[in-house]
Amino acid sequence: QRLRDDRRAEARRRTLALLESLRPDATPLNRLVIRSAGRVFLLRVEEIDWFEAEAQYVRVHAGKDSHLFRQAIGALEPRLDPKHFVRIHRSAIVNLDRVRMLEPSFHGDYRVVLRDGKRLTLSRSRRKKLASLLRSPL
Image (cartoon, rainbow, N blue to C red; front, side, top):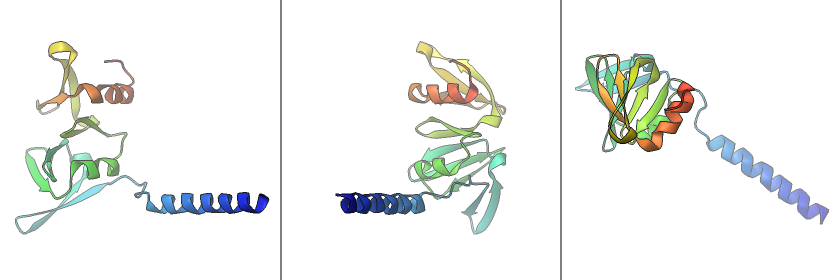
């Protein structure tokens, strides 16, 4: 019995080690490399206002510029620093440092208003997460 338990513990340890090795890099992304029209743009993530899903791509909005990034929004989200970026809708991730205000909309919904005036929809399913990050009830 003890020998069998020891093997299970070893198997459990090996399994956890394997899972740990498969975990994506814990360091948040700090720069995006975007190829567009034969050029390569290097964007620091703190320069980015918000991300918008476009099928299997992401449109990166930074100031007046926007670039198409070849990655799905679901794959990009875990690579971003959760203290600064939050998914507010299935098709949008915002930089919290670019949020100016939350504007009430119809039926208890909200719009996220960015510093440049852009209004984005805050989905009901994402409202709790945003409220916990802001440490304020919505």
